[in-house]
Structures are given as C-alpha cells and as structure tokens.
Image (cartoon, rainbow, N blue to C red; front, side, top):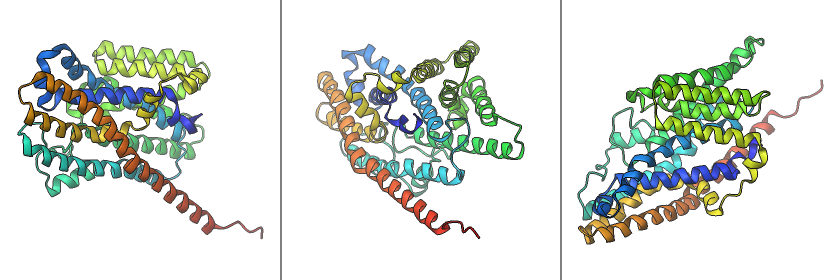
Length: 369
C-alpha cells in the first residue's frame, strides 16, 4: 500500500482543499483588493483570513502520514544513508522553490510599477537570497520574498529531524537487539512534547518543534492503524489530542486531530483510502498543490497591482479581481508543475536510478572462491 500513497484520492483531496484554503487566506490577508472589496462581503473575507490558515495542520498531518508510508512503514527507517536522504529531500524541495523565488522577485518588481503597498516584498539582497536558498530566512530574521514559503523550511526541518531520530533508533537497536520499538518511542515522545509544550510557545514557530505535533500525529496514525489492537491505540491517540486541547485549546491542533482520525479510519478500511470517490479536479489539484503553493502569491501580487492601478476605488471590480487571481493561481500552479516541478522530479529520479545502477555494477557479483 505504501508505495502508491501519493496517489490515494483521499490524500489528494485533503491536499487540494488545504491548497485552496491557503490561496484564499493569502488573498484575504495581502494586497489591496480584499481591502477595497471588503464592504461587499466582510464575513467571507474575515473568514478566509481567520480560518484559511487552518490548512497548515492538514498539510503537516498528511506529510507525516506519507513519510511513514514511504520511508518507515513498519516503524523502522528504510533509508540506509540518512544524509543522502536528507540531501535528496532538500533538492527536491529547493529546486522548484528557487524557481518560484525568481518568479516572486520579478512579480514584485512589476507590482512596484503600479502600486506601493506593504504586501510587496523588499528588493532582494545577496545575503537575503542566500538565506532563502538555505531555507534559513526566518531563523536569520530575513524578510521573506514570498508569503507562506516558511512552510518549505519547516517541511525540510521535519523531514531531517524524523530521519535522524529513526536512524538513531536503528543504531540503538543494532547494538541492543532487545530494545524494540525505539523509533515509535522517539517519535511519540517528540510529538507529545510538541503538543503539550513547544506548540504553545509562539517563539518556536520558526522551528519544526512547534509543528511536530501535527507531523508526528500523521506518522503515528499510519503506524498504529496497521497494528494489532489498532482501535485501542487509535482511541489512545485521540485521547492525547483531547488532553492537549484541554490544556490549551488550539484550533490548529483540533484540525490536526480530525485529519489524523480520518486518515487512521481510512487506512483501516483500505478500500476507502484507495477508492474513495473524489472529484477528478480535486485529485489533479492535490497533485499540483506544491506548485500552486509556491507560485500563487507572486501571481496574486501582480493581479493586485493591476486592479489597484485601474480600479483603485471600485469594490465590485476588485471582487472580480479576487476571483481572477484565484483562478490564475491554479492555472499558474498547473503550468509550473508541468514545466518545473514535474520536469525536475523526473530528471532527479532518472539521475538517482542511474547512479544506483552504476554503484550496483561497480560492486560486481561475489565470487564463490
């Protein structure tokens, strides 16, 4: 099952809905169009602004679920070389991300021609660009070049931390074979620490520790939904989420808990996970969601500048601009996926397979001497 997790309709649908929520949130939060159109539907724009960000825990729970299925389906890391796995993850994320940053820099320059607004990123400097390339822009207090790109840095941190923890558990088990379940203990411990401690400290929201609660729930629900007595374990995990909410109620954790339960129940009934009837447009959008996420803000910025220049005081025109920007974000993401993300993934996959084949041939067969 885990080999084709990325093509499960339910996962694609969750990513698609979260992607649409993020685009809507950024349209409400940034740029003058939402401010000018606000009198027409204030409740809708307020709702987009306040609740659109709840898509973030959806992405993280799904990411954790996918990580477990691909890299540690039985609780043990399948990756033999953790540094190589982390490096591959970095380049898979960063190559499309850097292409999107170039687009963001160009779109910001275009937007400055027609408007002056706080949503336009500052002119980029060499150190700022280097910090972005290394996914350290927030940790180094550099002004970001596009809204929401902090997610890419956090995603990479989560992946690296999890790979290292599972690798460490494997090393411990190698030297102490009697110590079973080390990976489960480490991941569960960090998940609990995040839910009850780190996620309650806003000063940590530039680090993976703040978000590991959601990511860890995705990993844990994948593991326990394949265990014996899985219903009991599922109940225990649900009680952990409820306890975290009783200590400090956070909507983002409640959302993460709901998505966790949804994925756990779906995996227990494999047919539901594999053949849930999902509209084809959601499946397609889920597959291009990373590309849409990367390019939507710079494209929306240009649409904002255009409508602000030609219709600076027309609520109806700017409401149409919001709809247009929404559609352009999806179309732009589809083109970016086709020309950049998919092309790079294919090229990287061919390179990896070729490298592995060369290494395999280089080793040669063992001689029976």
